[in-house]
Image (tube, rainbow, N blue to C red; front, side, top):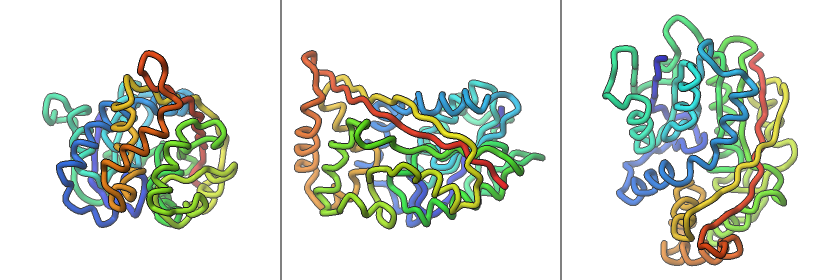
Length: 288
């Protein structure tokens, strides 16, 4: 295994930001919350896609918007050679800690540069993943450009995994995420051109694949319940997703936390835990 983590500014893909300003202390705390509370909620999505593709020692995987690296770690545990791209240096630092716990072994390359630097030596990628972007902090135009660039570094016929929210009626977290839209006065149908969460449509993953010049080749749905030890953990976990960043800029943090906690109350159980059933969807597409 030869993990490669690249800090690269692809336009608006998942947690990637093209302006990439210095990360304030509050953002670093949210990065830890993402890694310690929220990221694990998506493990069923990662594992379902990996099982379907048979990820293993022959896999050379590029993770777009790899964040703090849990999806890469799971692929590496299956024997895959993994590379990660993210413009959030704070999350990328945590990914380095996870994938290179003893520092930088000789077989590990950690580079900061262009996307081309992530290509494994002597071979192109044969799997590309973009688990987080659709229905998250992104624009369709920016994500299309990111996928097109990544597909150009992959073998012909390589699998590209796109992830996103399932039907809104099957995602209990949708009510909490609407708090961010309400606090920024953003309508639910502005997702195609704006940032933040928006309800998914039935064919949004397929439409994205077509825009990026990819060929859809199957899809699936996965239960990804969001479970938290208490209400405070739920608030911290959801704020760490980046979906509330615009709301935090528009309103005081105390107000955002208050309204988010109120939206979560219906999902708090008698023992104080918070449980929200969700369905996520993934699409397997192929490079042409």
